[in-house]
Length: 165
Image 1 (cartoon, rainbow, N blue to C red):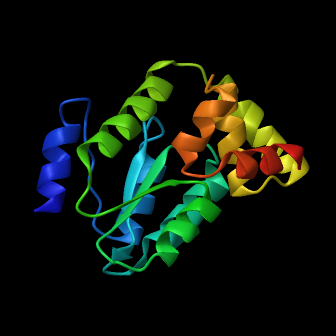
Image 2 (cartoon, rainbow, N blue to C red):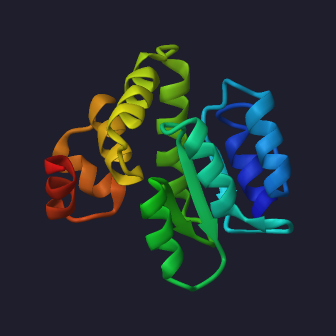
């Protein structure tokens, strides 16, 4: 039911590709180089969505990813932040999905890969953490510092500390 709702909503903004396992998710990522973003469930039949996200982050540190779960375990939110991805608990709030899809589509439709190239170079040369990559990507994409706290779901002090590193 959740997938059907997500698919129906997302088809209004673009093509939707589905993968039900970690392996299928990797295959979709490898075969489709123009993805606007990914929604990844925490619990997949062949493993954890976090494993899929780690592999995707290794290859593409700036692809927008929204991690979701029906679990009430709060540790998943911390894990999402550590991976530099957005996070929501199911049932998904429509506003969260709208904001995520708008950012993902805007990034994909810009046709400018220079941001991804700059971020990838900085990740390689400076060993940036996922949180630092998230701050850098949002900042280079034009998100003002005051809006970073809302986008990332963190305090202003967390953003300041991340920027200082």
